[in-house]
Length: 214
Image 1: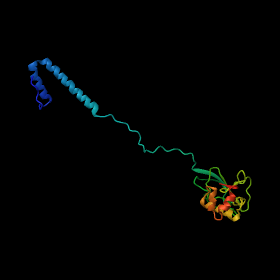
Image 2 (image 1 turned 120 degrees about the horizontal axis):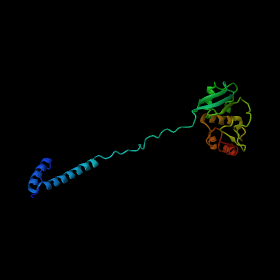
Image 3 (image 1 turned 90 degrees about the vertical axis):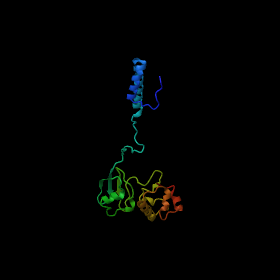
Image 4 (image 1 turned 45 degrees about the vertical axis):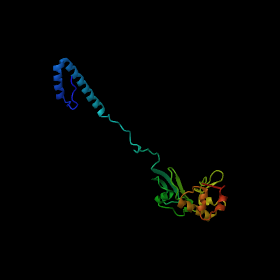
C-alpha cells in the first residue's frame, strides 16, 4: 500500500474517498475497523478540548481593603447631669457627650449672682450621672472636699481656688492663676506642667511635689 501524500486534506470527504478505494483493495471489514478507530480518536480529542478549554470559575475572597462592618459602641451620645448651686437655672440636664462644664452652665442661663467662677473648672468634660455644684464666693463646700485625696495631697485639676491656697507657697492670686490656666488650657497632664502657670518656677514646684498631684 502506498503512503498517503503529506499535503492531502484530512476532511471527511477525502477520508471517505480513501476508505472506499482502500475497501476495494483490502475488503470491507478492515476498513470499518479503521473508521471506528479514527472516530474514537476524533471523539477523544473533541472531549479533551471541551474538558480543558474552559476552566471552572474561581470564587475570590473579599478584597483585602474592604472595610469591616461597623462596631457598635457603648458610649452614650447623651449625658444626664445635675447642675446645682449659684446658677440661674439649676436642675437636671440632658446634654451632648461633647459638652463641658462651661457649655452646661451656658445652657442653664449662666452663673448666678455671687457665683465663685474660680471654683469651677469650666473646661472639664462632663460624665454621665455627674453633679456640678457652683458655690458662691466664700462658701465652704459641705462634706469631703473634692480636691483633697488620701494622704493629704490636693489634686490641682479638681481643687477649688480656696483649696489650692492650702498648698505651700500658693496664695490667693497664684491659686486663681492656676484655676484660670486650667480653665483655658484644660487639666494638667503632669505636675511639672504647673511651671507653665506664671509665678510658678522650679523652686516653688519642688515645694509642691509632696503635697499636690494630678
